[in-house]
Image (tube, one colour):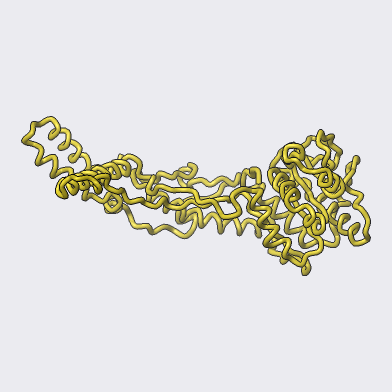
Length: 380
């Protein structure tokens, strides 16, 4: 077990403090001197003195790690998973090492997408645009500002010397408290606070903001939505607040395992009628893809996504979704209603290739397949 320089220095200090506290009044001067010494110690600088240089390899091999046949990161020599606390009592160094390795892994994953998954970077066809909303990021974390402590004795009739002495004691007490807190919990270097993003403090606010500032301002004549899970609730809220605008610009909406509720959200009759004609919800179900699923809500039709896993509903239903969008687009062009919203039979997979949107189809399908293979997708 390694012992850092900071431990060696602090140990005799605490021993000396304990010995002094057992002494009599004659030891007060020594106590004051030791307290003054403690208040002058910069723990951050002290911990850096015995810290190795932040010089890390730029390859997986340099870190002595590799991915095995199961795609698991393992140490080349020991076969063990990644260990964060590579060096004891050096949290800052371990964190920097972790970040450096993470950058290498990111590049490695991108290489896998092109080599092993045969993915290609394809530009979206001329005339198409894609907007990916970010409804889950509603605030940023910043360091909490330090508010100077105002002396409560400023307005009193105490002599100036006594006030200064009180202020000095207060500052010394705060220094000791901060010092102890850093020593007890070195990982908590800063006290953070949350600042909510203006007009984007919730997924619902974010959807309305993106609509007002980007989608509504665009020249697009046909707009399609794919909304997963809570995103369906956010879309219904958007309709409630911008009903006329959404109806005039949106051609079709594909929901995947949406958690919206037209009753709780108090969606009006005209909204429910529009959703019945222009929306379809692919829900998690063990039934084959596109099998009709009963609903207790009087809104849009529900069909099976071909999987009972919530996080896979978007990926599994993409062929049907693009077929749905194509038919809705053609129907709008010919002033006809789309006929795909009410389907009770399973559509053959090979019939669902969207011929007039091949590039966009390829990008969305392959990117989503990759995303699901790399992470545990949660509600978006």
